[in-house]
Amino acid sequence: SSELTQDPAVSVALGQTVSITCQGDSLRSYYASWYQQKSGQAPVLVIFGKNNRPSGIPDRFSGSSSGNTASLTITGAQAEDEADYYCYSRDSSGNHWVFGGGTKLTVL
Amino acid sequence: EVQLVESGGGLVQPGGSLRLSCAASGFTFSNYWMSWVRQAPGKGLEWVANINQDGSEKYFVDSVKGRFTISRDNAKNSMYLQMHSLRAEDMAVYYCARGVDSKDYWGQGTLVTVSS
Image 1 (cartoon, rainbow over the protein chains, first blue to last red):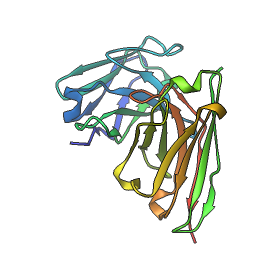
Image 2: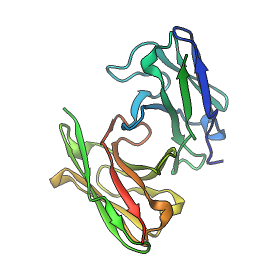
Image 3: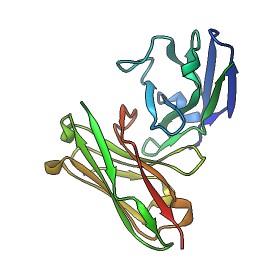
C-alpha cells in the first residue's frame, strides 16, 4: 500500500497530552517522520527516525511506532502547537515516498 | 545558516512548461539528498521527487513521471525541477527540501499557477 492514513482533526485542552496517529502497511518496515505546518508557513520537521527531535524542537514532542501505526505525542500541549501535522515515510516498495493526509490540531 | 530558496514559479497555461530552481547555502550541498514537495491550495503535502547526492538516483511520484525531471548542479549548489505538460492539478506551492527519509530544512516555496 502507498497510503498513510491520519485523522483529519484532533483537539486537545491546553496543557493536556495528545497523540496523532498515522497508519500504513509500510510503517511495519520504515520509520515515519513528522512535520508541523502553521498557516502560511513552510513545514517544520519535529520528529524523525525512531524518536529523534531536531535541534530547537521542544521535548514535549515525541514519536513512537507499533506495528502499522506511527504516533506523534505532544505532552502538555501549548497554544503555539496548534497547526497541521503530517507524517511521511516510504511506501512498501521502498522507492516511493508519501505524506499522510494531515491532522489539524486544535488546542482548546 | 542553512538556506533553501526556490524560484521560477509563475503563471503557465495548461500544457506549458516551467523550470523551478532551488538555491542552497549554509551546508555542503553535495553531501545531501534533495527533494521537491508540493502543496495544492488548501490541500496537504505531496512528495514529488527525490534526487541523491550525485544525481544518479531519481524518484518521482507516479502522477508526474514522464512529465517532470529533477536535476542538480553541485558546483552551483542548486537543484532544479523541469516541468512539462502542466495540468491544472499541478497547481501548487512547490517546496525544495533537504533530505530523503526526513526533510530537515525547507524553503519558503514558489507558487505554480496553471490556468488559461
